[in-house]
Length: 616
Image (cartoon, rainbow, N blue to C red; front, side, top):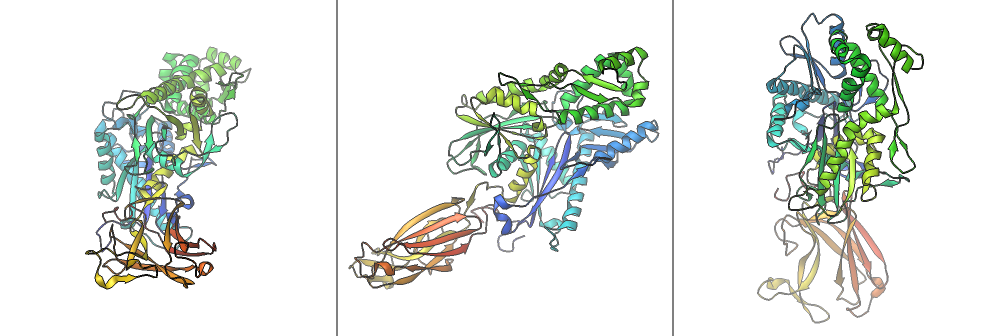
């Protein structure tokens, strides 16, 4: 805690993206070097499937609980242990749950996406909250362990729990009740209750932050590199967050002040629904496997061979993730590759001989194989992608007070955005009317954006100045206002007041990256060849004098005006430039006649929001 303000000052920020299919966390240290958002280093925690060789920044959102409901395993390890239990007929009466985030939402439509098996079958919302609490607790403890062990880029610095600000992502379609439930679960898991130390951010807004700070690819024939336009006041964009269970869609407008807290204006009602990639897998089981095995037989196999059915679904998932759509002559994406996946041997042996022969014939004579035609693959995708496109179309027209005009950007993020078919369908449907953008890594856009949000909730591309900055100068004397002892007459006969402050940026004012502000200073002394300009900072919004309480001299910049010696004072002008960018303010002076420049730099390392905003 800050001794002077009582406002929490984090040393580390951690984001937890608690998703339907997968969950992960990432963090960043808070330091002057890290204040430059474009260079900020975010550490992602990678997870590896059991027996796999590839890593991914999310673990499986799954838990294994004992007969008393106590969670014993998490993620991929929970699924592995559950499969072992199934092989042994579950003698310990364990329970398994996955994708259970979807069950937290009040009034959510019933679906088969959340899985509650074994002793967890029929879990109610109370149990769901307990499972979420357990999972968040695991993420919390793992994050603390990793941060403590890893430090920052090999640093020996030690961080404690009290040094950390946390941020958890939530779907945009969630109501206050679900958000409150998530915060309660997080607090029960051990995360801090203080709202300055535990933030919630909507998934589309976190994605918008990420896309504003990182370049991506514009979807189209040329696929050039592009970036979300957050520089133009009034520009609008839509974030389509495609996850495992939900697709969240929200539209925003950039206010004149820029992007950030109270400046990224939501202009549409958050829309979306249960349209995530997990539903394609559900259709694979309910439609394709029911067609191949028979609906009645599939129902039996789900009980007797649930492990093998899950393994077959996993193999479909792996094939689906690697699928690349082609472009038809008219520009529409099409699927031309049949799907060929291996059926587990134990499942194959459980099939009737007639079914085996039919499947072998469809697989061009190969046993133990399941083949889907390109048309079937497209059908499975369209069952979800079609409604996603309709939802985007609805969002484009849905805004409080009337239709949206000028939404000219669509950003696609989330794990489901790895599907080339999905993003190419969006680009083909809307690409003639808007720019369609995908970030470098859509799967971590929400997680990375949440880290940036936690680092400074009120800043994206600009900074709010913690101080009022200015420089020392002389101004015309104000009778009855300025102290008489400051009064003097310059060589032109003007009555001036010495020791005044010329304000360049006021405390709490938004300053854009690379913004330059200029003001001119008249040199009344004709023989003056150089002089020092004092640079000052204060908490006051309207500082008057350099020696007033709270006005602090930060440094000086030497102005060279030798090129205009003996010139008339009306021609002896020095331009003072303040260039804002990164963690410093660069100050330059330039003699208008000679063009000679002198430069200095003063620290500008406090981001607005770090100490609670302008009121700190």
